[in-house]
Image (cartoon, rainbow, N blue to C red):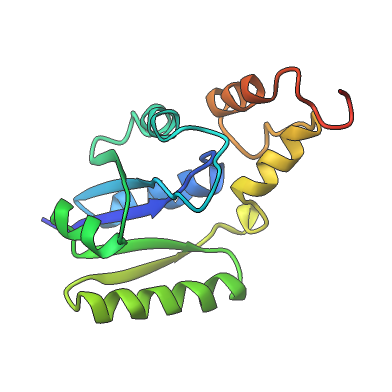
Length: 165
């Protein structure tokens, strides 16, 4: 069985993430989305909320599972029995950063490979940070996330729209 992980913070999950998830789910028998609990960041959504959102948006993909994790990605891959890490690339800057991480992971565990999927061009500009920025100012995020995620983001910003306090 070909098993891979797709790690990230997914704060929140965007249509770009979902595109990578759908495509990776066709390449691997089992795809585990690893929601990173990164203590260096202050997320908009809790780890539990991010896991729940990802479970909701991937419920129609039977070979996709969502788990949270902390620590090294290669350790998470090993715990899951995966030998591949999926990463999405939007631009050259992503590639430079992701290549370094992939090489480091390969040194730590030579049995874990990284598979890069280039982002669909219609999502090349999209990031979770940009979705949060637009939402924080009351902007329309419906082109960037699913209706379910849009609703969850708006709940977080309800009564806290920047420039309208």
